[in-house]
Length: 474
Image (cartoon, rainbow, N blue to C red):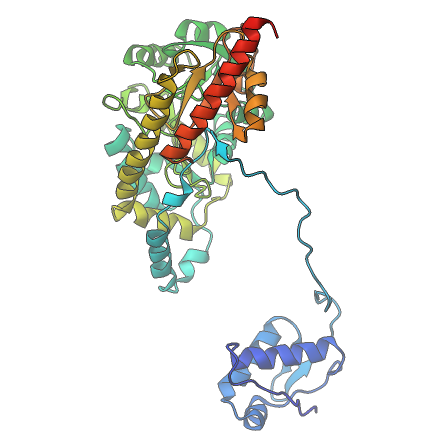
């Protein structure tokens, strides 16, 4: 029996039982303790090291649980065979990825940006610490497939008050992002569908629906959004729309057009509307128009919401509100998909909303984004010869049409040389549209007002130069 000459560091922040565990583990791995070697009893080793017996017992329990030792009743602990045990080599090192560093633009008009500097980190951490202090193993068990009822109750209350959505917690499905929820929704609806989306549109949703086997149709959009007559002619049974703020055109769908879409859905068997309400929290003119779902009296609208835009992209928590007729299909097919959001994160978000912290955060962000919206709008409208603005009443981006003769790619390349990143509307087309004036999509969420003004000033000079060349034939 080996005496185990362990040297413990009483001043180390590492617990004593971990030091004992690490020493014995290393000795076993390095061959210092051969197979079937008997270890000192916990009482004997504790006396030798002048520590409590429970400290040694904890070390032995850890070694036992990992398979480094085995016990024989009445005889003690013995070194186990290393065969079949997973071991990292002593010089194991994980090299840093050799990925090229992403360029940090001086001015980035990203339409998907958010102000990460305003993330309510102190509140989020306080809630997280409070929950972890409960030391409840419940948080680390797999939850219900549709998400925790507590969070679903909170979401049901919130979307009813804020967006006029009419639903119960039982209609809500929580998931890690809209990508997952669209995949789940396709499983619930079953079979291949013909899906219609506006053009230009949110291409990521288009690509996901197409990859999942659906037949996609691009439907024309006018100043009111998706045209109901064109939708009818498309032969689609699913219409994917963003009535509160169409992406990327920025259209706020009027009440009359909403009613036309609801009538289209009610007129055909198996027709549904997917309402993507991705950024309805941010509106700067007029009263908010209630969600399409709240106007639906025929259970044909599937409501899709997210917290990624209003809190932070890394908060990958989105939700579906299913019409009641689809609940049986969800129970039959959808519940086979496990929840993709950890219980702890769901609990944190539920408490964040219930405590009023989410409401305070939204009010603060509305003020921040409105100031940036106004700064961008004022700067652009000061140069009507260079920009024609549209889509400016909601969300966190707007559109700026360029003078005739200025090409979109040409403007983007010239802006790039000035360290300005802009985004062309053609990037969001799923079917090429008739040639017209080039349009830039300018997001303002991730730039402060003074920076926005400087960027627009530089962009105005660039557009002016390009326009002058175009008129001169250069």
